[in-house]
Length: 86
Image 1: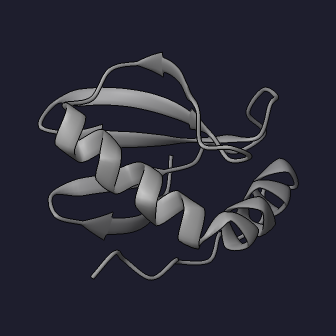
Image 2: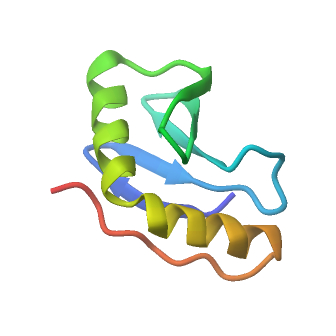
């Protein structure tokens, strides 16, 4: 599962040929959560509230890039890194 971004101790990851809906995984301090790309809804897992807010803020800024990586991942291609939240 490639890491496509890291910021504030949060790693953003995406699996190859993963199930729908389009989503990404966020890992922080041993906790793992799954968020939809469209609308950035928590689909599974849990994350501390502050980390979840940062993930959602980042995802809203990079929704198009996340969807691009999702489509690449469905074809087993090389995912592109996405800029971190500053």
